[in-house]
Length: 160
Image (cartoon, rainbow, N blue to C red; front, side, top):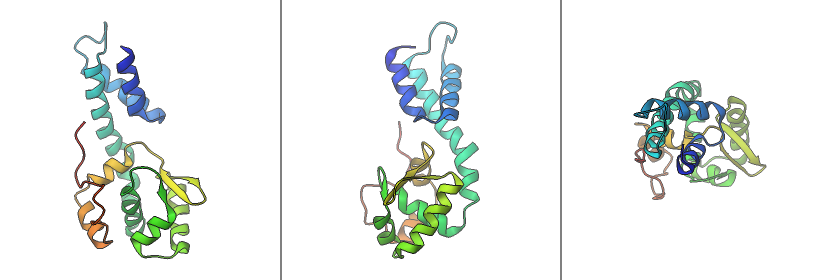
């Protein structure tokens, strides 16, 4: 693999071991001649397939296991491009800091979220934000929470 292909694969994996395996597997599958070289274009295709696969294998089952309130919390988080501030989540959802603390703890325990510090959190699995933003019900949940005024987020999965 070229250094550029390795860099793309590393970035796509996001430090998540299972994603490393998926990106590698799908990149190798995409390669015309996997015995001689895996090109950057193969890794781009492999990363796309890996993101789709991890959504089906890991994120979707975790999402389905969450109650509606936790899903709304995750949608509120997904409106941030990076870490989510707990105060922003509470404001978006029009809930108390106690409510946010309860769901923060539950989502960290579920493996969907990670606590960055006492005031912020992020998604634990790479691709979760993108997966949530691509959901058919994302616009509806966002509208219900009055989140649609935040123009930083699109309602469809961005193309790579």
